[in-house]
Length: 239
Ligand code: GLP
Image 1 (tube, helix red, strand yellow):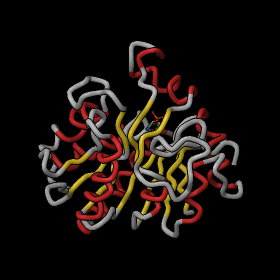
Image 2 (cartoon, helix red, strand yellow; image 1 turned 120 degrees about the vertical axis):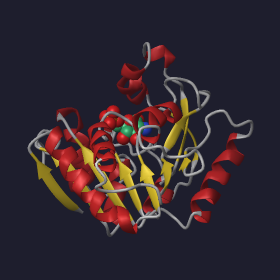
Image 3 (tube, rainbow, N blue to C red; image 1 turned 90 degrees about the vertical axis):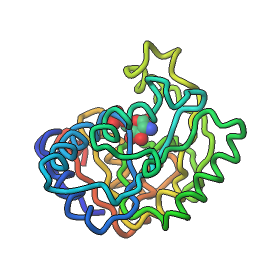
């Protein structure tokens, strides 16, 4: 895996913007992530599009995951997060932006149709990822199979705790999510993982330095030939 080491979060976001902008003209399907880590990148991308330096008009986006039980309009849903942080500022249409539904009547069918959708778009050209403190990618918690497909999963207590900052408290964080599987993610042509801060140091070390094992989902990325990790000093402090 290629690792780009940056001084801090701001420089990580700047490097990520350069990386994404270089590829955007050739990308048809861009995989997006939620969480705090990509937020500065998204702000910079919006600035660049508004300045006429790049465009997302031709791109379809596919997000990694959504909480089960949260309607698209729920303020803490990933639908609402992406709409507010990226899609609306860029005027991206609902037809070109895709997330799995957290309120499908038949969640299993929803997972199958999300996989079908990705295939019908021609597969993911570039998938962006963050990393959880326990090494999760998307919502694939430790123990997830490396060949897993989009499915409904139970969130680890530590993930609920880490994400409680986006809710009124831990008890409001849904227990389950629909997530692309590790197998789905590994089929992307190219992968960009961003990590910032000391809280991620242990997970980043496992991902880069341990033998791939299901105890650290992100270590599956070692099995992919085109992964770039852009991480700051603090996130790389144990490597
Ligand atoms: C969530 C998301 C992941 C994300 C992770 C890290 O659990 N499902 O896709 O990578 O959190 O989030 P943050 O960037 O806020 O640390």
